[in-house]
Image 1 (cartoon, rainbow, N blue to C red):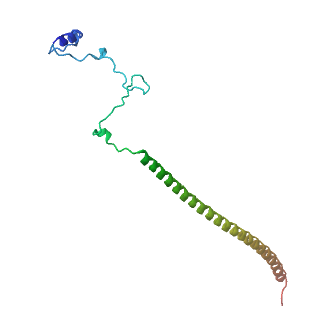
Image 2: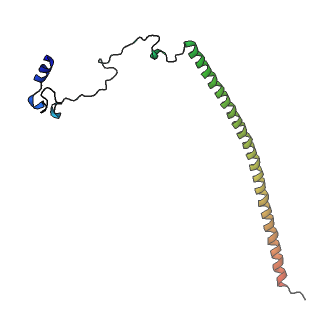
Image 3: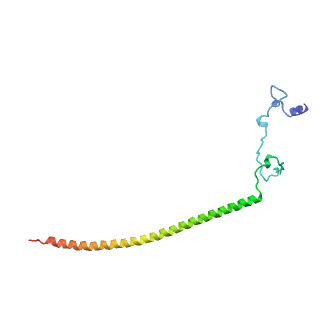
Amino acid sequence: MSSASSSSSSVSDSDMPKGDPNKLARPRLGSRKSSGTIIIPRDSLQVELKEEEYDVGDARTMSPRRSSEEIEKMGQDARQALMDQAKALQASLMEIVDRVQVVKSEHEKLEGGNKFLQSYIGELMQTSKITSAGAAKGKAKGKGRTIK
């Protein structure tokens, strides 16, 4: 009862509820203090890190833990898998390079054939112009004569 009387002495009469004189009321908004931030930086001196020891039967100690041998084996397996994958990628890259070389040689061969055909067609066009010009002159002379 003494604690109730000491706590009630620190509260003003205006903070007391109207109905029950022994029950404390919540302070009014203007008189309450901000609780501030509850986030504390890690490097703060107020942070207390406790290294706790747990019993063997405690559920927190039952998480699966790996031994150093298991971790080393997992690391070796991962390295081997990466090496196998790298070899497979290198092999597929070499296949692509070989295919590019084949396509390039086919392209050069077709390009050479294309140039040959262009020059052949150009020569045929020149020949046909000469032949058609000669034939046109012959027809023009033939039209001027009258055959009886």
